[in-house]
Amino acid sequence: MKSTKDSRIIIETTNPLDEAKEIKTIDVPKSNTDLFQEMLFPTDGNRTYSDILFEKTNKTDGANISVSDIQISKLNVISDKEFANFKPTIKGEIDYNIPLLEQTVNSRNFDQLKDPDIIFGQLFKASADYITAIELDMDIIKQSNNGGSNYKLQLREVNYEEGGPPEIRSIVLADLGFSVDDLAKYRQADGKYKFPLFAKVEKDKYYFIGIDNGKIDANQFNYLRLKGNPNGEIFQDGILAVKTKGLTYSTTGDLYFKFFGIKFNEYNGTRILGGTVISDIGRGKGTFKYQPRGNGYDLADLNSYTSDISFDSVKKSFEGEIKTNQASDFSYKFETIFPFAKFHIFAKQPDVTWNQTSILYSFDQKNWQEIPSIEANEILPNEQKIQGIQAFDSTISELIPKNIIYLKFQPKNIDPEKKSWGIGNFIFEADLKL
Image (tube, rainbow, N blue to C red; front, top):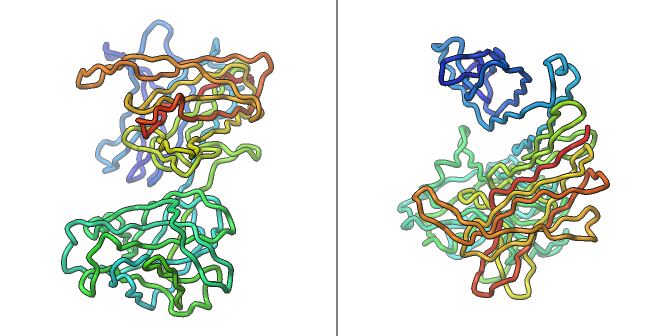
């Protein structure tokens, strides 16, 4: 939960008979990010409760409080005296706004993008394994909106050895299309522009970040004037580069930029994936649950993935492209901290017109076993019935408890007429021994 001002709320269980039992009163500090709260509470054995009520103690304090991702679990206890022995819940939280590499001098204007069919930007040496956003400084020179045509902010691979000429490659690792009318939503309070752009990169390897104006009718009256540093000696881990007509040229100076990355929660040195909740339910038993949070950053939770894999935030699904002689797959590595002997898989095909998916599991990445699926029917909100959609709902038990499992996802029985495949509504759960 988060709040626009410091506030306080009462949390109660209620039922349709207006019977209520207070769980807890908590202070909610002002925060722009969600704060995790955990409460253990008994219910009245003589009554049944169906709802959870959140109510401010001071309804006129002006605070807007939002509550999200509520989870309720039945505990394996006889009395609330056992609460004292419970282990705290371990929750995967990711900070997507960790400052990384930057060059903040912005005293020079760069006008390269006023010429047509230009890709202009910055070579840099990656300082971390993930990039989540980049901040640039620019002026918008605008006489028209170019019919809403899009610029493309692109992260590309590059061939470059320090001191030698660069070559911006055609391989695009991440891109974001935007028109000049879109820029207002990326503008920060200080006038800079911060663009969300997720990519997994290799630390200490060189890459290129830049803007492609190939779809724009660029001229001296319609272009983006980037800002930066005229002295290329200040920033040592990269250079400015321009690509036009297939050729790459370096130029003096560096752009103003700030890169942002990721920080995962850890437990005793083990990384906790962002969609994870590990809970004690009492008497030596626990649960491990992982579910993607539903945004492009869910790619960061993957152990591996091919370059075609993306996350569709509308379908809430991972998607891949089927191409001849080209692999398409992704995988998870779940470290459950505590051992498990039983796990559960839930998932479904995002679109019945797509190719179906194989889900395989392994404990050593050598011996893989396929998880069975069924073809089910689904009723959409508009009452349309979809037949034959692939679904997974499997429980698998092991004789020897494990605390690491790998899951691999890949297209199954490829139909050459179907160019897409993927998986949605994915949940992994395991029964833990604490």
